[in-house]
Image (cartoon, rainbow, N blue to C red; front, side, top):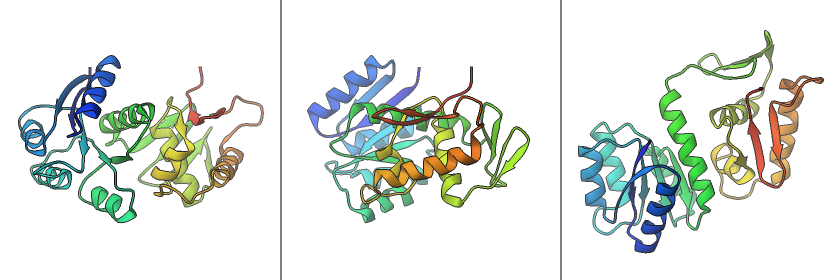
Length: 225
């Protein structure tokens, strides 16, 4: 069971997150101030932190910055009402692993937490795999069935994201934010075009598709049975 620290000053949201995450099987410690969050993250063991930016007193940016200075290495998911690019860049630059803009869907929060927790256990790996496809992150090479594939930079980034989220459905909005690093402005048909191009390069004509379309939701890479 993963242990999560949730730091959020909105009482109803804090209670909702605690209850929802506990129902999903997580052990949750929930606090309402940056001071409490910093102290607990510094003195106890957590697998990930969900951290609001707009906190009374010690703000989320300060908490995150100080935690990273102290050597806290676990994933931190930022919650923010600020949608400006400079705010997102600041959070990522000082050590956030991901962010969600309020209001958000709880299902997306769960998906992002699952991805961060998987990444934390596998982040030191140099290879990502699905079926007979292997991605060499250091050499930036992709091989399937012994054949090296020629991918563009964007195709490589998109495939890496799908592999890191293996067996989990990712929405087009998640791809826009995490691969294109935008919250808007990337038409969904652009993502669909890149998925199509990627499929042409990695899929086998007679086999089951490695990249599956989840109708009305997004995409998923799933291991072959």
